[in-house]
Every structure is written in C-alpha cells, then in structure tokens.
Length: 146
Image (tube, rainbow, N blue to C red):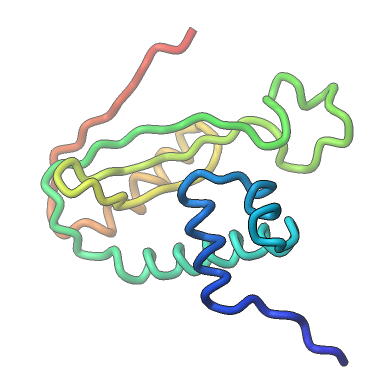
C-alpha cells in the first residue's frame, strides 16, 4: 500500500496562519500549491484538535463577567432557499454559533454550533456552567430581528 503524502509541520503552520489572517482557501492554494482538498482536511483536523484541547483545558475558569451571544450564518444556502437549491446537502440551511466570552480576558469560554432553539440554548448554557469555577455576571445580547 502506498503511503499518503503528509504536509510538513512548517507547511501546516503556514497554511493555518494564512487562513487565520483572512486569506481564502483558494488564495492559500494559489500561494502554497497545496490542493483545496488537503487544506480543507487540515482545517477539519485543526478544528478537532482545538476542540479537544479546549474541552480538556477550559475548566474551573475564574471569569467574573461573561457575555453571551449567538451569531447567524448558513450552510450551503439560507433556510428559505434550501427547498429550491440545486443538490442541497443534508444539514443545509441556517446555523447559529453560540458564544460565551469573558468580558475581561476576551477568552471564549464556550461555543456551540446548532439551531436557535431553546434546547440549543440550554445545551450551550449547561456547557458554559460546567467550565466556570463560580457564579458570574451574565450579559445576554439580544437584538430584535425584523
């Protein structure tokens, strides 16, 4: 069996740095000569490693003030357009990223990606609660959406 090509550690670091600086995957492909598929797989691997690390390390946080908010985005197409979209994949439509940020250190104490339901809010807040050492002042940003 032929072994898969692996990116060197310096190449992986360079690609992730370029993406963090705001460069698109296509631009990184042109700059580095690495395929979009390889870059996409690297992003998934880096995200899984970051999630594992944060889940293990972000415990007993001593934050005093937490700001929570949700950010809307969509996968493939907006929910209202999924029915008429060409070959929309499963899971296409609206998605919300729930965030809890320490007001003093700007650490993201918890994040959660889901829909905008009461169940999702409860999951998110429960995850945040197990990460905190003591009670906090919680600020919720809520905007009226037209």
